[in-house]
Amino acid sequence: MSQEVSQPHNNLFINFMGSKKVAREFLEINLPDDILAKLKLDTMNEEGESYVDDELKGLFSDIVYKVEFVDGHEGYISFLLEHKSTPEKKTVLQLLKYMTRIWDKKYKNEDKVLPLILPIVFYHGDTDWNMPVEFTGLMEGNLDWAEYFTPDFGFYLYTLEDMTANLSEIETAKLRIFVKLYSLNRSRTKEEFMRRFRDVWKEIGEYVARTGEVVTFTVGYRYVITTTPVSLATSDEITKEAKKITPERSDDMETIADELMERGEKRGLEKGLKEGRKEKLIEAVTKLLEKRTGKLNESLKKKIENSSEEELDKILENIFEIETVEDVEKFI
Image (cartoon, rainbow, N blue to C red):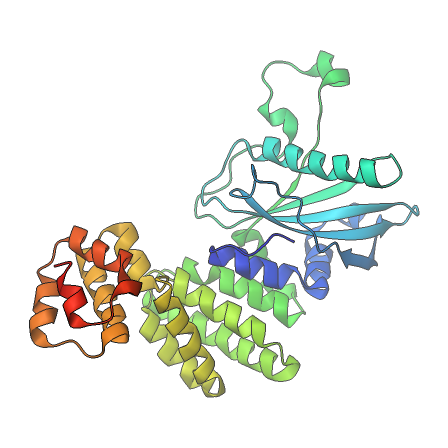
């Protein structure tokens, strides 16, 4: 599988689709019956290896399963998470490069034949997908006379809308949690978000209590507090609600929140940096400095509030070098 990167969507995808039970039920619900009839899903085994190279690692993450077909041959089912939040016309071309990398490696290392690969792409963007899912969709002109020398293949595309439409059919708790978490930010109001959050968090709590799979809790918590727009809920609001539902995990949540704060990944900091909103920068700087130096006096708080965005950025860039109030004042 792909190595974990900073993107919370990626980490959630790896944890959930890396579960054979989750991957299998997803296929059973979503693949066409004629394709399912060709697969022996009970033979699925994760490869434990990523085929995303340096050129594609910013575009995809992958989970690859080896599987037997009913005709006795073996091939691969590749689940890919599309990192971009808007449709990309070149996706099918990039996917061909990805599949070629698998074929090249398998041809060299195995029986000098190319295995079948079933590619499945997950897209979680807000914009409707309107790009080709077949390679010939990139070609121009009439291809009727060019079939012999023109490559042609397609991939299965699944969006959040596709997955939520099938939510009532899902029996595996972990797959149901995966879909619910991914779709949280499609909430239209704060009230809707909190209602949906309480629902999925109760299910996560029950799942972890039943299975002991704490990593699902930690990945889910990181995902929610680092991706939820502040217009829907703040980190503190999310954590407060989560502690009511899963009080036994309060220490875990505090540890994660502290870690994210130290790494500058907590949403208050992210939003301030990305959107340039001074109030968020002030909030992030104040919280980080209080963690580094203790409670700030009113005079220093006033200086921080009156600082420019450039000065606030400078503090964040040097946060791990700051030990005292005097160190702070060097930057403002």
